[in-house]
Amino acid sequence: MRIRKLHRWKVTPSRARQIQLELRRRVIRADRLTAVRRVAGADVAFDLARGRAFAGVILYSFPELRELERVWAERPLEFPYVPGLLSFREAPVLLAAFARLRGKPDVIFVDGHGYAHPRRFGIACHLGVLLGTATIGCAKSLLIGTHAEPPLAAGKWTPLSDGHETIGAVVRTRTGVKPIYVSQGHRVSLERGVELALAVCDGYRIPKPTREADHFVEEIKEAATT
Image 1 (cartoon, rainbow, N blue to C red):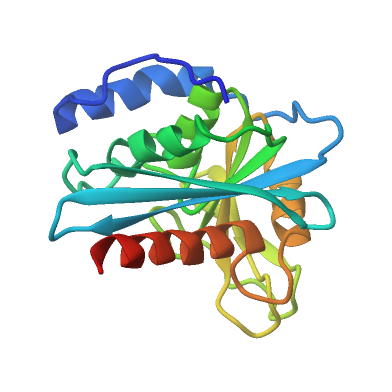
Image 2: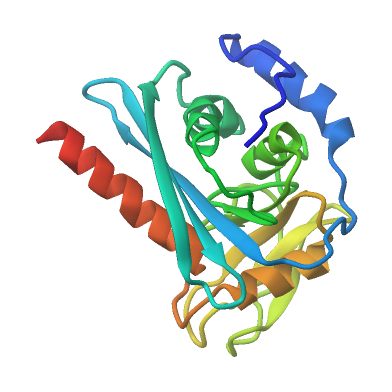
């Protein structure tokens, strides 16, 4: 996949926040999707003892969710853990994995937030802008905002709000289990993002693309450390 080089990665946290504010102007929060035929899931695992990061990307057909391709990459872990700056810690190794992907996804599901971010530019937005591809953030925990509890039935959701602004959705992907937090990354509306996130759930709480990417990177990390 083609990757846009819009900034350096070796920066201070202060400069990283400034880059987020600069690049968020490039985010498209309207649907720029036609037919969705291929989707991808992406995730990262860390070996903190060795200072290494591992990224995995799995490409699927849609709506069948048949696996088409999987790639991975390993890089030195160079950015510290700073809340709100996840992309500067994870995106470099993720982009290295995406660069190895032969097929191009129409939509990428990211284990993290997109617009539901203090500066409205989480990792799903960052990857979407750099890859020029529709992205959807599917996070397991809340970063920012308030919400009502969604109904218990699978497929129901309530808005995630920050003040008077809707920044995402709290989505019940499986009846009676904890919801996930879906937000726009790039080139997709919130409603379409929720629809697609539900479409790639296969009876589990976490959407299949990011769930399987998580398993994949853990296997890679384990193999590299044994």
